[in-house]
Length: 418
Image (cartoon, rainbow, N blue to C red; front, side):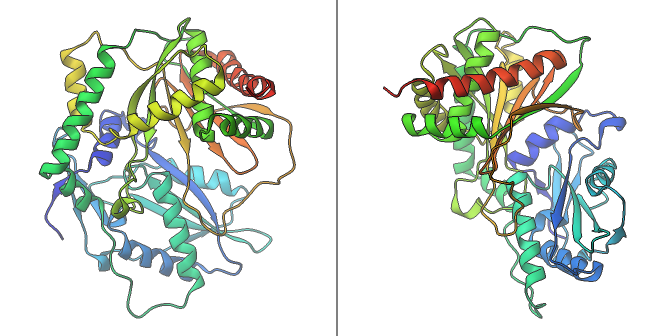
């Protein structure tokens, strides 16, 4: 066992979100994935592949000492310590089986932060049901694990396992070194300056009861086409265009033209850490001003302000919490926005390219952890999906906000290019 060390800043952000969860909610940081496997994959083969990638990525062998909630620690068990064994399930619904597997919380001090089952379908297909705690891997890292698993299954077993990759403990040590501390101070200054100049604004309470959390997802091929058109005009990404439209929608609902928005920074900008399997995401604020401007102009502004914000995406959440405690009049962000991008990989399921009618479907949220108003967008290549999870706004307004986002994108794309 290696010497224990501090958490990385990304791990610390996860811990900050979950440390006070009640026992009934301790499953909420778990994420469930369903991965298609090559035809004929057996439980033994899948278990061997999982064992191999666990030996490669320290995050899959990391344990946590959480007895001191203000100073959590981590240590990594040696590569030979993890040997996967897979149960086989033939449940009627593999997605429901994966969610059921995710409803059991992890004891991070005593067990690994992941579990898996092999799903065998009646048609002979095999899928891996993979569940992990968010402190182990974010969405990018989870896709890296899927890619590694498929590569392992596709190749012959190796007598010499690949070299161990850097782990979150290595990242934590760099972030606590002098250069890392300087970056943290710059990030804290960014928070202090931005929050000091931002006006207060908040979505009105339109829900049926205090604390009610609702969720809905917009799916639209038309909205993606519109976002691409606007992105070309603005020389901005689809993510920047959707953020601009979302900020305009939220600002209108708050009767303001300036929206303080939390952005999810992936923090994977340094080559050594780009493919690190851990949780590196952190929220960082940006002020979107002049939200009543032409959407193309707003997208240009958002593009540059977002880049400036994510430069300060690595910070100590406890230091930001202390900053807020010293200045309680600081405003809270109106909403949060995250455009999820995954690393390129073969074998990922894709949708039919044929256009489909736009829909907004109400859902039951698996987790209520996170910002009060959180929009998470993804681009499948054919469809734009935006999932909104919101507290105290109610199902009706949640759905209305998504349709307003959809209509804002389409209306702006129909306007003649200047």
